[in-house]
Length: 111
Image (cartoon, rainbow, N blue to C red; front, side):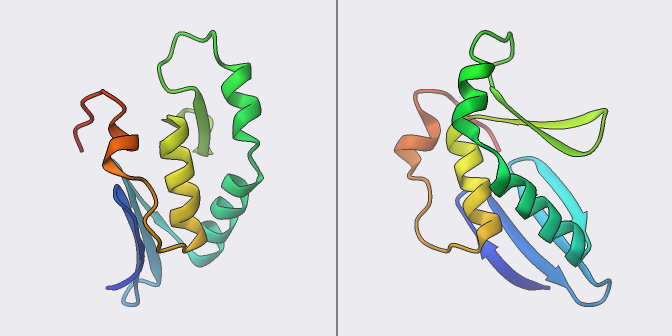
């Protein structure tokens, strides 16, 4: 297994034995081909998250950013700081992404 990128709450690794990328983020684990990983990264980068934060501000769910995961029945819901971390994880940016002070925001988040 070769580590490609890591953040506070996730990592991307490549398994040469199976030719798959493993995307782990929070409590989600997804196996992706190279093309699927590139398509997912392109999709994430195309999202105007500020628009959707405003658009979904009155919805009942706590996490206002809803991301499609290739199935109409399965979606990933994230907070703004989680979305930005996922975006950085997929971009391959290894700098300090989200400080603990920001990512917890007075909430208990168990991973």
